[in-house]
Amino acid sequence: MKPFVWTMAALFAVVLLLGIWVATHETRTAPDCPQRILIVKRPDGEALECVCDRGALATCFQPGP
Image (cartoon, rainbow, N blue to C red; front, side, top):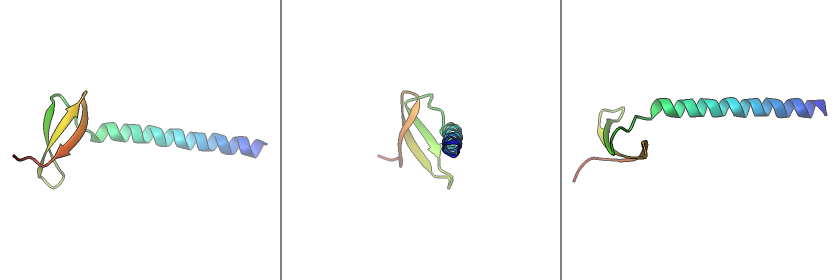
């Protein structure tokens, strides 16, 4: 029974650490949304228009008419 408990504890710790990493990684890469429409630059330098919903980035698309 002890090996099972240790295995479950180790799996829980790995899942917890992975969840923390994913949560912090997402907050570092997402731009702030101070306005409803936001223009950001992609890594290659092209501009994207993004729409924010409740302070979070919702969707992005190529700017244009």
